[in-house]
Length: 171
Image (cartoon, rainbow, N blue to C red; front, side, top):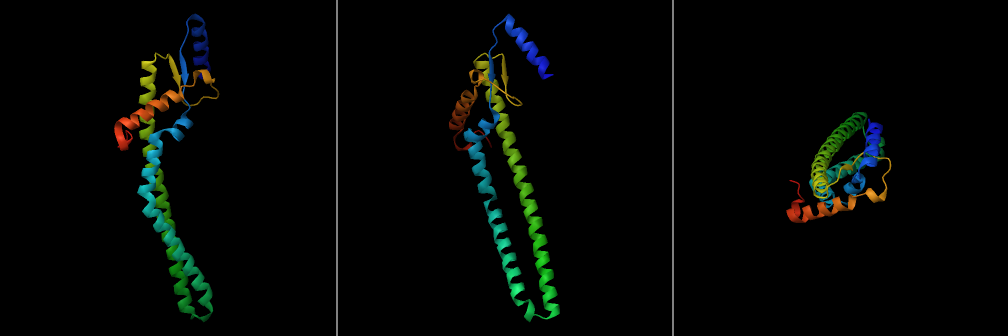
């Protein structure tokens, strides 16, 4: 499929001059102001839960240390109860950590989807405004710097972020 497209482009290029552009997706995701804003939003949204997880891990660690130190002076029943409580705390912490990770991944994917939608709109606008015949975005093994229009897309994303204020074009 890709080879057929490239063969078509090459044969068509021989007949007429094509205007082709390439956008570096990884660079956009690193440098776009909307990506930075999304990262800040996620950190802000998940910081309290992350802090609670760290505190829970510290409590478990302290409880383990206390059990190690006091195991010799505890009765068999007390030691078993303390070990059971500790195991339950660890299970709960793992469950909460898994939920945290799942929620964070879900939200990260949401934010990425919003950014990808905006990037697609900007690429299409640049393509129409500057009369490109073809703009390649993902799955490119090599692109010459002559066809790299990532800077143009970043400029439009930056302008979009400024025009929409702190929302960064994403709600």
